[in-house]
Length: 496
Image 1: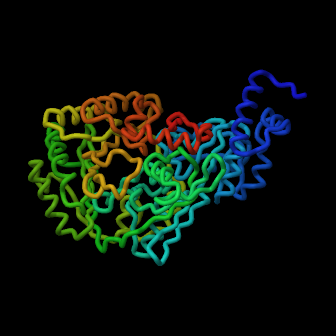
Image 2: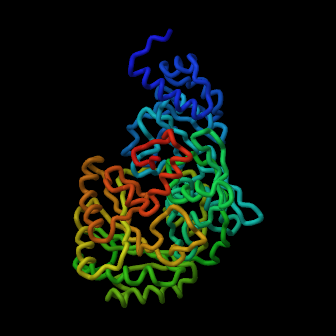
Image 3: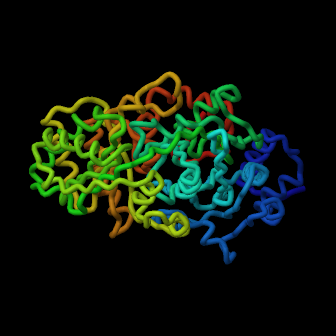
């Protein structure tokens, strides 16, 4: 007879319900294990990369995430997984013991959701292989960082539209949709996914594709971060890399214009950038001290300069005021440039990416409709709210626009632009959140309440509708099918 408290009994009952869902025996031995806590030594025998507890020497490096604001959190354990069998072992352990479980790829969750107190972190960084095949497909482990992906693609003269931050993981980027510095020409990262290998909470390894588990494939592409299962591998189509890429780089101090002219420049950019040639992608970044433009053109420098002259005319500024430089380079070097790395030196950039750390909060909004000049003036005013807050306007349009061929859970293809909103945190998380909130909420009133799930914000009240829009009901149906017992639950997870 086991002497357990009512609270322990409740927890045991919940654990056994999950165990039954996974096909485990619900016997007295399991009940004893639940009361005593997870058997980490048993898990260690099944995870070759190691399972680290808070008292272990390797724990802190294994648990570390990109954003230092969240590195004070203490997962119950960190498992360094390299394959589907090891992920299955982690899911079994979490389900038997009813402890939270979260996957980590690049560790860039803006809300730190890959590092949860008292949870089992499934660190996928050992599943980092990148195999670019002769047929033009690339099979990529879910723990690969973008710089690892770009290094291998560059060797073969291939490309995938993906992000610009070297240490971001391919999994998090792709599962949220995937916007990039060439998305107007090539579309989103999810548009190039052929199949996804994922371990669902019932511990089955599934291959999701247009012909196998199509609803899961739909949901993973745009809403898969932390939902429905733990991805172990992607297969992508790739495109020939552009022969020449022109990187457009703005002076760190921004345009040589007064702050009072920011609204005029922003209005011009909103009219021009989303409808310019698809080969051109630019972003405009504003705060109370500067207005700066950077961009990428899939083509030669002379053509890029002509296109930017159209913007100068629209904005009423001169090339001298814009203070832009245009540099032709290879596709691989362009990705290194955006990563802040030395051109031609992928190995050093790959090494540095393992140790990058940030300290800020982020969120987003979508420009969902055309804005008149009066509204743009209010938007610019919000961008000037706080010296530690800045807003980056990224154009959509082009190949991002709705296309039946690329039906997926990402709901914002018709938006004009995506806004990244950041708050530096020199005075800690609470101060940064307080500075960012009025900008996020004010922009929601002015331009639309949509937001990009990859810029997840723990304090955003309207996150479900903002992130998934018209797809909420269908996504709940996917969750009901693949995670009915909420094994993968987290604060902004999709519930059945």
